[in-house]
Amino acid sequence: MNVTASADPADGAPEAAAEPTIDPRQFRNTIGQFCTGITVITTFTDDNTPVGFACQSFASLSLDPPLVLFCPTKGSRSWAAIEANGRFCANVLAEEQQPVCARFGSREPDKFAGIDWHTSELGLPRLDNSLATIECAVDRVVDGGDHYIVIGRVLAMTETAATANGRPLLFYRGQYTAIEPEKTTPAPWRADLDDFLTTTTLDTWL
Image (cartoon, rainbow, N blue to C red):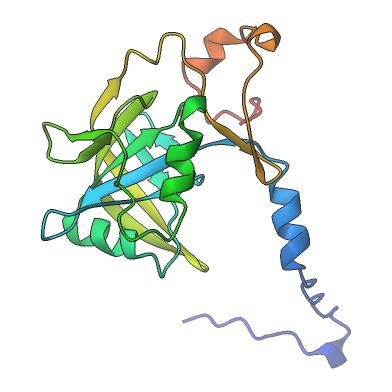
């Protein structure tokens, strides 16, 4: 067995530079420059009570197989219910659903009170009037600091009547924002978008 000895500073080898300390507030402010959509992740508890939470950290991960991910805090009670259930629904919020986002981002014990929703064919809470819903089975969970990275295997998807002319609810610099329709333009690299998730060549910007 070959073992590489660690370098002795006395031999003249440079010491590794200490990692800089990152200020949490500056980190939050900097990450806030990245505009995100907002989802509500929902499931049922063991006693068939619907639970959920507002989630910015949702993303598509893979086309083949179809995978998505979201990142709950480790102390999230909603995540505990999702972990126990094994399935969840990601509801993509429309810009008119600010009150829905506020409700699911609160500490209210019954976040579904006053919310229009129904149970999907797969037995998951689906919020009415969302732009889209993506129902998944928990595929695996990865440690991510003070969060978990939950990878979901897509089981079903829906686009609602709101999808055609709807616009997403966005979050930017700590506040809600939205798309200005007159400022949206088709991407000139539409062909590249077809393989947006799977392109791995070195000459792409991904």
